[in-house]
Image 1 (cartoon, rainbow, N blue to C red):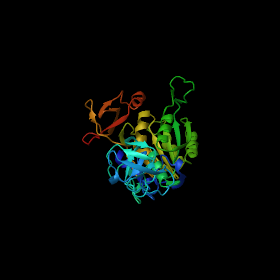
Image 2 (image 1 turned 90 degrees about the vertical axis):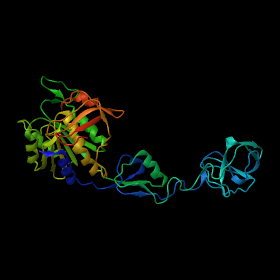
Image 3 (image 1 turned 90 degrees about the horizontal axis):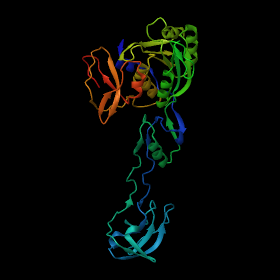
Image 4 (image 1 turned 45 degrees about the horizontal axis):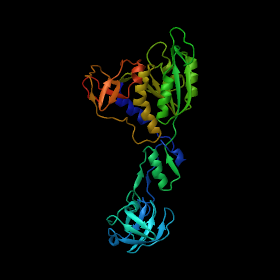
Length: 381
């Protein structure tokens, strides 16, 4: 049995990023940039008006003074207008500044009188002008390699005229649940059976990580069927096997993997819940054997599967978000394994929720955070 830190490091050392690909900008949301991107253009591209109003020479404006309106500049093509002292150009938000103008007077601060305006407020140089490059300088980095592309990132890339983005690989995943006691939701339960809940949970977690789920299959506790199912599922980049990885007589996953000539690198990790965890490879497919109890499957997915998917996808950061919190109750861990407690984090305060056994799915469903209690004598986080 190895520590979770050693297990994660060994997994990530084995995992390689998938080949990068170019996608249209509209399809890049949520993927990770495979290269850095830098501004081709400053933002704004040119000096422009921040308000609807009049472009003027500030030094020629006095409260109560009159200016002659000599033209109009809407947003769009630059009409190459010029403003001299004693003149004003009608202008609209986003429109390019006329030559000679050094301020904008808001339309609310003037009175229009034919082809003249009366200034009703003091005017300062630079007022209501968006200067070229004040938001973004040419050559400034706008997206780092390995950074997740967000909706706002797409807007920024579009502002640079970028139509296609090079992103990391698309991870294809398969889910294989095991166990004679499991019945697909909607089916009929016989005595001693339960509905299979891990596949929907893992499917959702995979999708949240950006993986494409190619197949979801259930297999009974029968060696030959299990070996055939593994062979089919191992055509994906990642295979998650739920259940069957412990030491019971009906836990057949290890033997079935060996039948497919799998290289098993990790078995059993010092983590609670989730000790009966397995990691290996069938050819180029990374295989994760997760415990059958749903909370154990959830915790081990976050700690071991998620970072592997992120690395395959080209992400630069594989860590889960961490925030400081105060405990609502005293918690201790006298065991030799780190314990992940499920609970609610509200206004910086963490409260355990429900039963903390590995089967307690309701408590997990009501939680929004995990608290890591380190093994006895180690540091918690």
